[in-house]
Length: 506
View 1: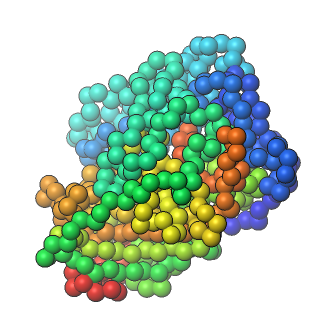
View 2 (view 1 turned 135 degrees about the vertical axis):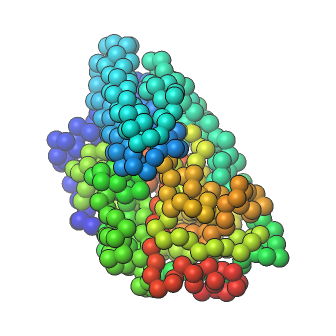
């Protein structure tokens, strides 16, 4: 990881993104901000990311997530389709950046967003949809008949529950409980009206409304399912470090193989040390590992957390970094616990080699919370409070905690699926796998961070922190997610399953 800087002078590119993105959240230029004030300054301008919006104009762009609709893509077409889906992500990023840099034009012309941003974006998406349809049909599959109904994108305010300029209503403002076991929570929701301070250090979040004092949140952690007689009660811990060596990139080999910057945000990697957009199963076997158990070559990776205190990091002018609104000082977790646990109702089968699992949704703010699986808390509160769509403000002496509980049911056949989700599933509320799926060891991760305490005052937040994300997702807490590729040697997968099934702590 490169050295941090605290100087106020920034490159022209960074200034342009910061200033323009700031305007993305105000009313036609009636907004002010000082994004790069030093954290030690005591006057009001030092509140990095402080903005005042005069009205609720378009804050972000919401497009239907086509990839989740493509559940039946022939294997021969998947590489091409994944590449086209990555192109759609690039289009949205470019449209968002244009939204952020044209506030003066939008103030002069109420139809500017529709005519100059959303309309052309729809046309470009239609071209890619046609190519996706052709690739699927050419490989012997059948493309969904309603693809063209997904071409329209909408302009939405930060609350995510309104649209501008026609098109489809997005459901980013709904809270449907997460749609996954343990994925939702009952406090906060994603409503609360218009967010007036959504600037952040780079102008695209987070806002004061994205934070909550955890001491004021009611307990919301549900009881665990009752263990049955045939439960697998053991646990297997693998120690892989915290990415202290700064192994980062902005790729995502699961969703966008072969596409540089396919994630549009920076990842921490532990475990396998040779993971990038161009990695293959053969690469993984030769990648080496940061894990103490050298038979664990699995890839564990997640978006970095940054504190927006006026500083910048090594990627301030890079794709996926500052050029796409991911700014601030990268925080290295002080603890990273990776543990596999069993199933409360049955024995587990070993994870298959090269199994891919994504948990959570990097686009949950615009997609809605059906696949959200974010869990935020503080040390000392984890058994009482878990937050899905808010960042906790922890009391002094308490650290921020991110936890992930991955899908623990497998279809018994596939190591991946066209939408990277349907080959695995969460157990039901009782802990049982449904639809003929088999119970596998459940990967759980707990990341602990020492975070400067955010301070909210007069609707503004100082020392905000947030996960990296796609720029149009506005750094919302609900977009947190985690990725995993199972790679083991010398029978380790079976050893993990046997440990859990025998009730041992390994």
